[in-house]
Image (cartoon, rainbow, N blue to C red; front, side, top):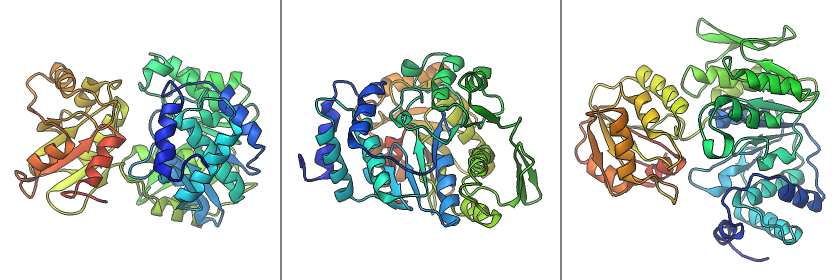
Length: 424
């Protein structure tokens, strides 16, 4: 084995390929073929701009509530790399991941795999060995050329289309939709979780020979008193459903997309209404509008694009806040800071700006300039880093104040690791 610890493996993987991202499937597909493994069970692949993690979380809880052995691959992680690879609800341990990395290293020959490709192959290898009943794969970036797309999904879901990763996926919703649609497969369900998704997404599904099932067309949900109802294209109805445990009206769209996938596979993996209700009720997803206990109130959210910020703004409005409202923000250099700030402008009294942890963080002066350009006259303070910002804020907050931490997974991770407010 090349390395003995998970951290050593990950550090080496960061240096193996000259680019952090290399959107091609030939190398990773060849290594998967060399490993000679197969999953042997239904696979659901989930892509989209926002909502992927939520949909995977719903599916994971629903299938495990129904008694199935479910494996889920997600990215990125918040606190531990192991969060990315879950087998029957448990994170894969360091030893198992290291052993998988060693097998991939031996099988790859001279192929230069990226960090994400190594992780994807490790998850698939461990899932193949776990003999699951169903596998859930979250797309890392785009869809058509993302590493998870080496697997032909039985059901594919695209949650939403929004402006994100434009340097890789294109500048227009249509270009982004084309890349996201790459996970659809001929003759298999292509669930579109967004009623107003770009028309190209559905058109592309049809061109590929997939069977589109879109929210507002083939799939529907409606609220009833204290509960809600889902309806599919064949007249199937799932009713008396509890509100999704994750906050926000948009979570009904995410939950409905997950139920659509469950219904598509129901002949192979039957799921009762009781299991469906249990899964919706018990789902948890740290970093998605996580409200920490105690006063003053701290809210953590990984929202990092305009659509995510608008959804977050709706949750904040519903939550309410009596005292001063602060936003502690750090984002990556490729994000649209002005659009994110504009979406939250009505809620935020004062902005606290930092460079998001990691090598992709937008410099704080650039962030300040972008927000000032979008919100002239906005009250702002710049800080050396997130820990300095938390320290400066913590000593001045009244009990009824509220602090929102947002902008990236690394921001939420740093907040969770700060002893003044974390961990969850």
